[in-house]
Length: 198
Image (cartoon, rainbow, N blue to C red; front, top):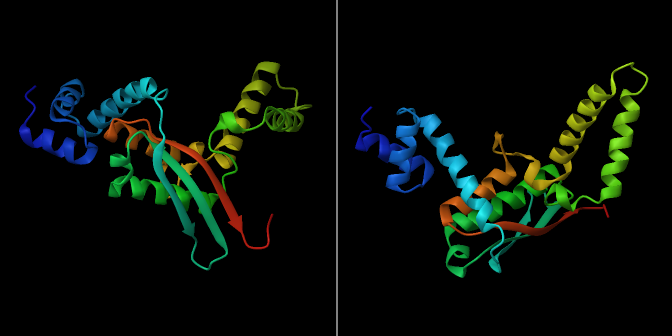
């Protein structure tokens, strides 16, 4: 199958990937644009695994006040260079993540940040809800794991559905930014303030 320059241009415009990456992804996907985007995302995620160990000491701190002035967020998002930190795209990512925290009230950045005792308490509650229903232990464990996944999607920023597109997780925005910049991009911390709440 022949991949046209127009197809490559369309994929580049949508993904921000290089010309040769786009051509290769389109070939692999048989010319299907949506499948080619999936191919690029998978390849980008695989490359990002190697970058996560690199130091990300630059970045931005964003202060976001939700309309009505009753909720505010301070968030720190890091990258490797001040060049990337000064780009409008990085500023937009940081602001979108701050809005995400304001809207959905995450408690932690990622699931590894949730204290083990909190996870065990939730696990015990979920197991107690299913106990006594006569289900086999393997099924109970699957149900508990499913409920834990929902718990993480509520309390962990990177596991939450993105407020502007619930087909994406907030963490995928960070991975996408890392793929486009070629740098390690990470959310370091955030604080959410609500009027009258501790």
